[in-house]
Image 1 (cartoon, rainbow, N blue to C red):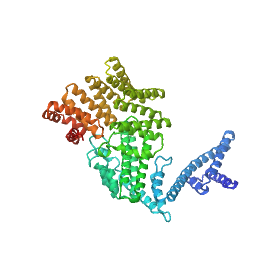
Image 2: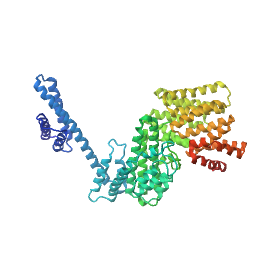
Image 3: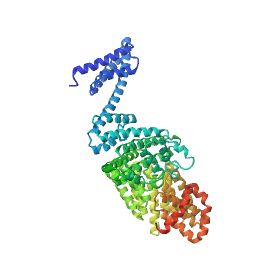
Image 4: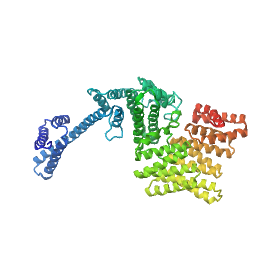
Length: 620
């Protein structure tokens, strides 16, 4: 019916009119052409107009190719330019009409959803992973459209009000998005710092003028439990939608700013990683808090599921970035109690996700985190699951990364044959696919595993150790050529630990000091702490008591801050030293090393050391 000859004729006539007006000099701007299209083309019939326009473009091109008369050819060229203008304004018309249609569909979907499903429907519509994600202007239009619906349900009105409040809060924060970074005149950039004084939270709390966002920022600033806050705060749907809009704008704004740090793209990537993880954890903690809440009534599960939905959306966006950390770096640029066991909270939303490439990458991240925290069985389970999912998704880089992580975790379990097997598989696959980063890590893991296996078998044959060390050296050289500091840190750390293991402490010191520097650059607190832990062991064997105390205390503190059980290994060594030299002498030496220690972990870190010794002695 819509494709009737009369409609085609009408659009053909419209095109003729625009061309004729152009040739007569009556078209003064592209906006005139756009308005003629708005008035002349009926919604839902764009395909017919586009077909007529395409036919006319082909006809004019044929005239240009075949026309020899100069006057007629000049007219055809002017007609062609007019058609090009029509094409451009037609594309603009389509874009605007698609946005209008999408907005209309969004309103309809929310209105038709069950009352308890409207939050989830809104979050799905606002998902930044959609091919045509809503911008801020469209969110504002959505709020207006929802508010104007006749006899709108209470939840629709609350969603509309929440959008407006979220946009208002974002406007108050936009000019303060990164100013907190410039205020941090010393120390590492990121979300860590003295409670109430550093990071963005205290500044943002002062800028917003609504109680719920302000209370959340204050909770984060003081490193208090976000889970407990959500469980105790009386939040309604309007408040939650306000947080959705505001926090998403903050997260996206920070990532966009960090991604543009062209003077040091690696620092920018590190900070973007921190931002993705920090905000994902906030949503996951809020979900856990709502699950425990008695203050939100029947909306408890709705709010919790909505927050898990937001966590997954954010992680899926993160997993698509080229700097997604397949080999670590998860603790880069943030620390503190509210993030110490951060990735534990992400288990639940992952259970709700289907097998995808993004899911495999997220599980890789959590598996690494679990190993850092000494949860080896849990780490292996995640990496095995990620390995299967990555293989099904055809993500070879992720598959190789999980083989490498499994190798490392098996070493931690003293399963050296399995560790060698995984690293060999990673090496073969990385060479088959040309994955040089995976190859560097596989070489490091293979050499690392073979050193420990030879040590366990008490094989003194120097050729065995020489072959294993050679793999580690190859991995180091390759990672240096690639310029990948994370892999360099791993290779240097592995070489240092291997030399400590075979009782070559002097050689170990150089590797471990370089490994610490590389891990500082990559931002991986676990590798920083691990290098310092073994550096303390090497200095102890060389009778460098002061250096052993300084490196041991810093390593112990860093590892404990990220909930790695390895901190107890360092505490044990320092306790032995304390017993050997006596309490008074140990404290005197520790005081002498205070300037060096606080230069890395600050005064608060230094003051926390006695508490760590107490916890170790009491087995807490």
